[in-house]
Length: 524
Image 1 (spheres, rainbow, N blue to C red):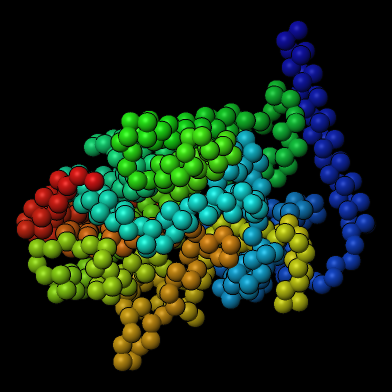
Image 2 (image 1 turned 120 degrees about the vertical axis):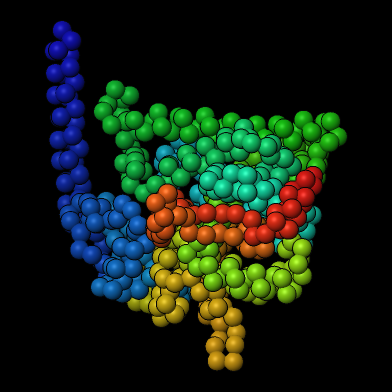
């Protein structure tokens, strides 16, 4: 009986698949016959197959490199058809400005990702939120909290102390660099968002937050879930094969809900006890008061805080790791930076955020970290909200628009020897004009530009400056005396990180080690 039942299920499943395929063919044929004449040609792009279009050609990894290669054949604006979903890749930063900045009223929406957005409910973060009033309201809350140097002034001391704790931890456990960078990024954002002070060792809330962001990264991986292309699949009965995404989404949702509520409740407890330090959540709760705190406003505050962590933690970790990779490969850069720090600050002094304008070479290192690394190499995709014709090409409503930021920051026509780490490219001299500031590209465009860029800039610059003042980063030597050369390779999809690389980290001198250990005793 069980065998007969299974055979019946297999037969039904087989028939379902054939029926779905037949329907797709019919729908494609009808669509081709009824498709109206376009008002202008679509941009050029690789030739696709019937029905599926360019799905089989769409890169599953390192898409930014594939898109750059496509540009050599098809030009700066490239069209692809993904099962009927229009997509356009922009390989030219001027095009990105023209569409995403100057036409931001048209190009400010986001793609709908069914698993990440609907099932795991990340559609409430600014990153995936559709353009409209709720997005503008949440963005306004975040911008008021961390969108300017003035608003961040209250957090300067906290950032400096957290970086001092980081340097101490690296000296204690130099082999755990990745874990230390994640803890530092989490500590800064959790303090600003919730007033939460990370505990020594492994912190429960940092671990929870990183798990939530790992789920977000997995859910936004292109091509991972077929239901993102065909949401109607979710109507199939639970016994239907290939629906494992439901359990994956349920696990993501559980972790996300825990992280959404646990630190928020922590702030409420502190407010009731009268011990809450200034933070994004405590300020907005106090601003409204418990009597005026509507469910809608509480929703905005909760998701605004989670968005701050999601948008600032993993991206900062990527930049932190890029800095240490670059210092391992380019020791001469460390030497020049130390000379500047010693000359400007004097021996026995640690850099502070207020010293930033006095250290132009350290600033150039920070800019080169942004350019050389690949935090969000193809940006976060925009979606057109209406039909548009640009440079003679038709871009239909609902088109996914991808700015190939990696191409912009590694274009030899813009940057000399772009694969090399050269901070000097951003310094003016008698015979050299600074090259293009990468901040024009890496923080996004138009109404979707990163609202936390000022915080990210301060955190990454401070890590660079303090590490250069206190640490020596060297290539690692194996037990048999061989120098272990790091490779420059980035992995990931929406947010990428350098692959683990060997390096040796030690204190620059006993004086600087004593200084940083003393500074790390400060409380926040």
